[in-house]
Length: 157
Ligand SMILES: [Zn+2]
Image (tube, rainbow, N blue to C red; front, side, top):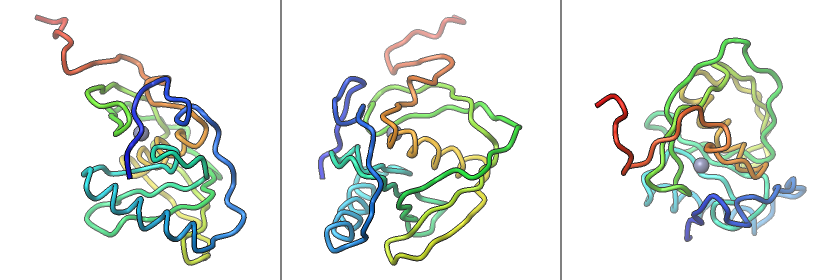
């Protein structure tokens, strides 16, 4: 699948709709998104990034197979926040520091219709929140503290 790019891409700015039924079509989408994530060497992918405005994200946690999250929902987040650098497959060549909760409690359904409640920390929490932002039409550059591009000069020089 082709990954949509650009801060002003209409599909990347749309709100995604909840998935009511995990049918063949959704399973096909999951398979294709996994392949796309694998070939792009990313750590997370949201359905809107491949032009489908449905509440589905996949994230990689460590070396394990990617986790499929359908209709993910944050139940709780830590008061403690962490600032770290992010990038996005939809915004090539752009990185920037974003503040996110250190830890989140998350509810989702997987592609086998099983529901889960998990606690994610640090990078894993960050990836999930970044991908969930895509479902709201939010890009990390909307939240960035200091934007960098591959062409920007180091201001400290
Ligand atoms: Zn992204």
